[in-house]
Image (cartoon, rainbow over all chains, first blue to last red):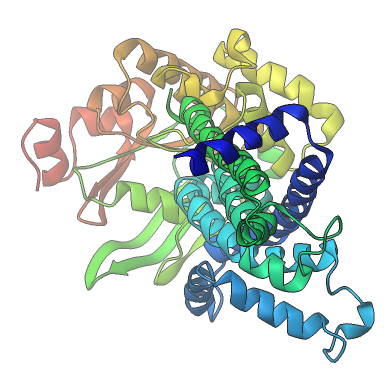
Length: 235
Length: 253
């Protein structure tokens, strides 16, 4: 029992003291994952909307593909991005491997399909309700995309948060392309993996507590979003 | 054809004129069934045209075909003798049985319709204010549109449609799910719009409503036009057997 309680109290002390190393790791995690999700949203939401309202050949295949890519294994994404960015790879000249930028790229690849697939569902439902009225007002299918994205903003927020939850908790991709370098590319998940194997349970546990708190906060935010959306939509 | 009726169209409308609206050889089939089969229908300027008939007669589909929301399998729709050209949709409007309101404020709903209709930004606030006043919705201007009551929602949908000053307004049973007070408010708005020269084409189930608002009646049965006559004549002595049965309160199948 002592094995469990001691690192636990050490972890709480680290958090409460605002340990500099701990803080740096948490901030880098947030910076990498938030950047990745913002970029993924800028790509994935319009992509999802176009898939929802578009009528073009190959649409059905594209929808299936995007849905399937939601389940991309992070380690495989990490491996592919590693091969692209490594010195011998096509993007090797950029010298991005083992930088936070590489980690952001990997997470963008991981999260974009999630945001695109969830956005497509949201926009498709909304379009089912709006399409006739928008055509009647003289808004074409293509021109209706910004309107649908704006009016679907509450539901799209949940897609954004789902993407963030995936990015912040992911370890496989960032550890391969980031390399888990101290003070440079060490994020919460990679540190937990490393420190646990080193036996430094206090730091690992402190990060674990913060990670769980963030996950809970994200889910609570999703719940609140759904609530306020319902208010606007059906009250 | 028929004269302009009790209500003279305004000079402005007469000048730009997209009417008469006519349909020729209009056919729509779905899953092997013929839903619409109309050799000829002409809707001209004048008082409101009421489209009546039993369920499944094709009233709503006809409205959507005329408005251009559905493409017919055969036949064509002509505006003042010409096939629909780009931008013709901006001179029409439609109100649906269940109002479709954007997830924005009441005022923003009206502003959106004006914007996509091409009304310049500087002229929109005044137009929004006029529409709000028309619908008696000024106190709710900033409220999310979807928090309005059913009657208020339909009133908003109607003044939003009227805000773009359409020459022709299609209404698909706009009062079907409203109580008598809300229905009266909607009917007043429709009658006023007709008096200002907007051509009204309205589907209704309610003979009383058609009698109150209509100048002429298009009676449909199984996808065809059973008759198209003045409202007075229609309610005095319907020409078709189906319409007689319908008005007598029989179950017309």
